[in-house]
Length: 312
Image (tube, rainbow, N blue to C red; front, top):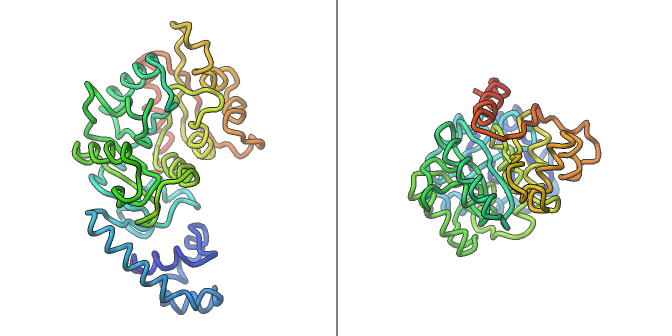
């Protein structure tokens, strides 16, 4: 099946990622137009427009030197293949080899000096082990991906707009995106080209960030912080969560580390409370590891890649 066909089907109402995966055999053996006529006949009047849009998305991706990687491609990340609702298509600009070993290191946009210092330390260490993944926004995200104010070369940025970021992302975000690409990193989006950033797209990007990462580390967050969206998605995967614990500073007892303390004190119940999951049975987190020292960094790397052996 051609990438164009999948881009057409993505626009058909009722043809979400789960549906496409469940019907893969029929999709491969049928013409896309015949498939829609049979299974979604009410969408037939819109097929010509869907096809025109699909061609436009391919043109825009090519113009922006980006790849369109479908779930049928050998380049599609193995960690996404195990997730039924992972996007059927991702747009990638940069070094796609960085998708093989990925850690999400996240935290508040309103970070403190202590949080920034810890983020920089984590980024420097984990960049030697795998790719660093986050949303490239201000605060913890920016401090994770920089050393001496320079972007590290193995950063995976998940953006909440189309891959034509000059048209879809804020000026501040564009600056970080361009710096990541120039440093040899990778930008990934699950949105059609032309889709602008908005409050809703941020939660979708958080979901992809979680899905694409083999492990997640929370650096700093209050109990109401936006990190809850990425952690909520991640908690539903059988992968490890690391949480910074820094009792050496009185600041750790303040509101800015409230989510950290909650998770460390209550474990999975703390994660559920932070992210708003009412049914703890939905949580699949393999390990929750308090991170206090470099030896914990090493342990976390082992958890990440032993828990995900089936992905390689």
